Image (cartoon, rainbow, N blue to C red; front, side, top):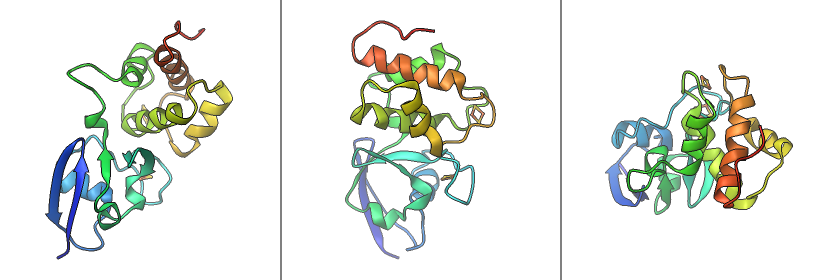
Length: 161
Ligand code: FES
Ligand code: FES
């Protein structure tokens, strides 16, 4: 079996995997990083979003072999030094989750949005998160959380209600 090597959440990892192994499977089953969820088999739900070389990617759409040599960040790698990432803190603060199944993917997608657009409008947040499906929340509090995290990360005040 071919060997794949990558950096995951800052640590070098490698394993022999079948060529057909998806990145999501590699993360969950080889590395036991089960914060990356798998909610569909049609590349639609977005629960599996991680960052590959800094960009959000649905990890069920990529083979582990395609991420060979890459730097991958999962939801487990977002908090630093025991402190939640501002996006995680904002989801908590604004009740941006109910069952939590979609949350890792939502958070990882939203963090990527702010990397390229630190001051998104509500419409831009909604459009960006189009590829992330939530069955529970109606999206309102998720959008509120992302806007607030953006404000916090810009060093401003809390976003308006
Ligand atoms: Fe990847 Fe649904 S599990 S998009
Ligand atoms: Fe349940 Fe989003 S919180 S799917």
